[in-house]
Image (cartoon, rainbow, N blue to C red; front, side, top):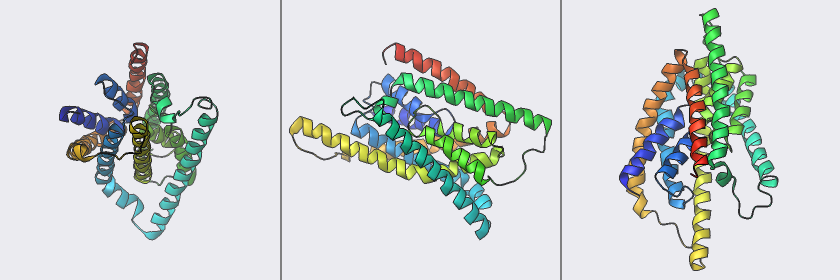
Length: 299
């Protein structure tokens, strides 16, 4: 893979991962347009590095907000830690439940099938993009109307336990469904549940730091499994994962995804605070049409 393609994927990942427009949808489409094998172990590990870059962008961008919101005192820290843990547990229950349900229904009679392969198909991504777009538009327009009726609505308050559970519940659906933007739907869920725009944003991205290491580990294990399966088919042995040629390019990709992520977060915060959140939803609807058109053309 050329450095140019890696940089393009890094920029796409950095923007789409943190903007509420679904990174998986955009990265998969970009890979297909560039003729890359989206299921290869090396591609999976490259994407792991790009995810790592965006995770560091989130930490750098929100660190000051997290200190103010979650580390101002021990009682505040314990209260918000329990809410983050509760939201993550709900996400796990919903996500794992959906994985098992799909495994035992849709994929039951398909040998060696993986959910990642199913939801990597553009028709499924288009549906998920559309659903996310509708949710973002509804949340954005309702909050803009509430802000107009009550300019002092954005008070400095914490996300409640009920709101955190609702955010975790919606996030659970973003685990298997590629195209169902995690940031878009969780921030929208918080707003619809009555949380302020800023607290919904800060809480949503705090959940990223909890989930991303687990997601990265899962992708690494999946890449190793794919590599062993391919090696066994080709040579009758498990083989090993050759990463030496990808190390430097992957580091470069991680840097570009980090920088793109910082720009994306600045953009997201600006539009969220200025009542333009629903614009992201409109984009998701447009993207869903484009993705489905690509599916019809055989991509």
